[in-house]
Length: 218
Image: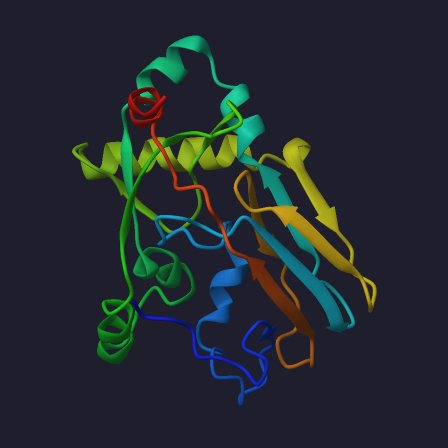
């Protein structure tokens, strides 16, 4: 499996736009809603992010609950979404930052894994959430445009302003969150400034499971 290049401390990813950062070309995708490990069968259980150097303006981090997004659906919507599956790709989220990619970028993105996930995740706890994010390419087996319209609508509702928490960073802050039920994104800032964040993920042990799989495995 393709991995992000490692840092001096392999347990800490340094997020910055310093040209020397080995992942600098991928970090613009952090501006778009995502959860970590969306191209993995078993995503990270939790994520920690700490602020080391801040931009003079902007650069906050926003969060939106995919548990709440599911809970807000009508009964009929929950029924209609229960069996749907969505393909998540590295290219889908990178194209939001690079809408006219070079052949080299396309070749690189194609080396990253893709994952098909259920749209509705039945968690071990019994809670359900929507498996959303801008890595979602399309709904499997559905007309592409129809599927995109559905995903865009669900994303818009899940991340409406009244459902978003924005964290305004101070140097030294450390935030930890449930990666299994939250989307996050970085807010805009001047990328010529030396903003630097440190990220560590906690290994997951819960695969993304559909309603049908959860019932069979019960």
